[in-house]
Structures are given as structure tokens and as C-alpha cells.
Image (tube, rainbow over all chains, first blue to last red; front, top):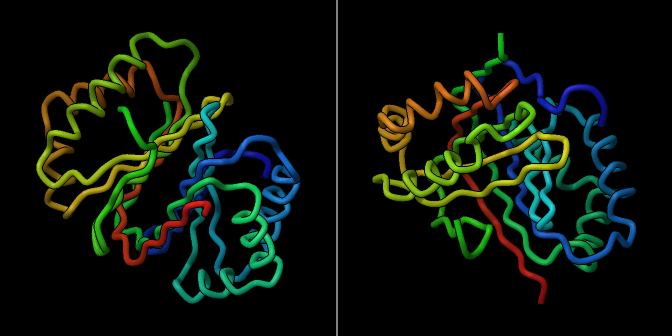
Amino acid sequence: MSGSPFANTPEPPYYAVIFTTRRTEGDTGYAVMAEAMDRLAATMTGYLGVESARGTDGVGITVSYWESEAAIDNWKRNAEHVLARDMGRADWYAHYELRVARVERAYRWTKP
Amino acid sequence: MSGSPFANTPEPPYYAVIFTTRRTEGDTGYAVMAEAMDRLAATMTGYLGVESARGTDGVGITVSYWESEAAIDNWKRNAEHVLARDMGRADWYAHYELRVARVERAYRWTKP
């Protein structure tokens, strides 16, 4: 990912995948795969953007934004993404919560 | 906040407030107020939990979960919260995106 850390999403409604994770210790290929998945997601139909943060305690939140639930399902079934998910469960994550939500309202603010 | 970094949310549907921010430099009271707001939110009707992460680049995501849009509106109008929001705009945030979303589906996974 490059440029702004904020997703330049359109007017609602659209969809958000909220992925809250706790990493295991060590990298074991995680950073490379995470970046590859970000790049791949950006090529998918209906992708609107992503926002991501991870603290020094290993807890991270990544929110990806999508035009429709169909676009999310398509991304969920992508073969490379399925592989990354399996590796995530095997190696990278101690726990995660994944929520699919419909964005109803949105506001942004920039310091004048 | 203490205990698990994951919100123990019920079965959907429920609501999420996705708050993605970039902090300004320095603390200037931010940490104290952020913790006070977390404690206050937890006392509000319809509060379900919160998840939060901030990276070393100053970009953070806080997702709070609520039973209903009415609960979110009530929290939005809370006097102390209004004060914190004004201070946030004056001092703590360079930019933020705030999205209100209806959680439709949720999954969790823990390393066996």
C-alpha cells in the first residue's frame, strides 16, 4: 500500500469487512504475504479501499471496503486469498474476529 | 480498557462505528481523554464493546459496537463526548474518517 492511509470511499451505502487480529510472535512470511494480499485485493472487482493499523501489542485492525456483498464473496473465494487464509490460521494469527457490515453513513474531517 | 482486545459481540445484526484517525504529533492530553472516553462509552446504553489499534505511523482504527443506531446517536450527543470531539478536532487529529455500519455477519477463530 502507498499514499494515504485512508480509503477514499464513495457515498454510502457500501460494505466493510472489519478484520481484527492478534498476531503470533515472529514474522514467518507474514509481512510479505500481507502486502501481496493488499495488492491482490486492490485488483478485485468492487474493491473500494483499505485502512489498517497494528499496535506494538500485536493487535491489528484492517478494514477493507467493497461495493457489494457479491464482491466480498468473490474475494473470499479467490484462490490465493484462500491460501493466505490457511497460512494465517496455521502460522500468523492467534485469534481473529471478522465482521461484514453495510456502511450506512460516513463523515470525514481534515484539520484546517 | 483491560482484558481481551476483542469485543465479545452477540450474534448480528448490530452496529459498528469505524473511526480511522491520524494523530497529530505529541500527546497533549490525548491518552488520558481516550481512556476516559473508552470508560464512558462502556457505561452507555446499547454499548457492546470496542476494538482499537494504532501503529507507529500515528494511524489508528477504533471500532465500537452498539446494539442500535439509537444507541450510537445517544453516544454521539453525550456532553463529555461532544467535548472530547471538539478537543480532538482542535488538538489531536490531523484527519479522520468515521463510518456507521450495520454488521450483517460475523465469524471468530482462535488458534487450536
